[in-house]
Image: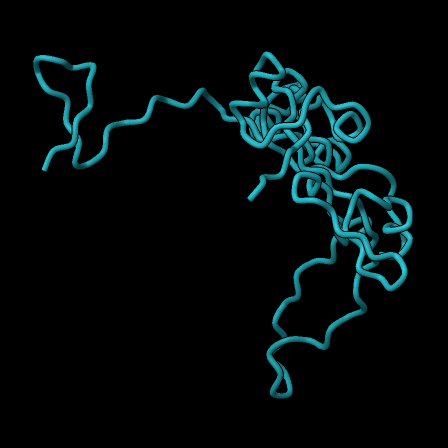
Length: 189
């Protein structure tokens, strides 16, 4: 049985066009890249109105089961997939109405969707976008006047960051440090 060989690259476009290498495991990918890597799945390319249009645009990258277009990829090349995503803003969650014997309201029209190519690859750790500006909670609390909706949207789209660095993990309930070697954690029965 062969494993999927994921590209090693700085971003999804580079993973499709010119990856550094293709590796199945993190250790192999880090060795090929010469630095730490992170496994990610990101959209690449433009959105398509229908699945057929996306399959035609990405022929040879994803499996196609349509009559006359049947394509089955070898297991090593299955790092791309098509996914249907909601365009724009997702609809707000429904609120229960509890009226006329119904708990939930009648469903509204389905949101507009598009098809995107999703690429799974090993991203270089140095290529991870670094967040700029203060941590969102601190920025909101320290603002002298309420932030406008554009500033709040920008804060919401930033990657989450901790207020302070994470502390080292404590030892478990059934683990102990022997007095003669406090640098070792051993199981305790």
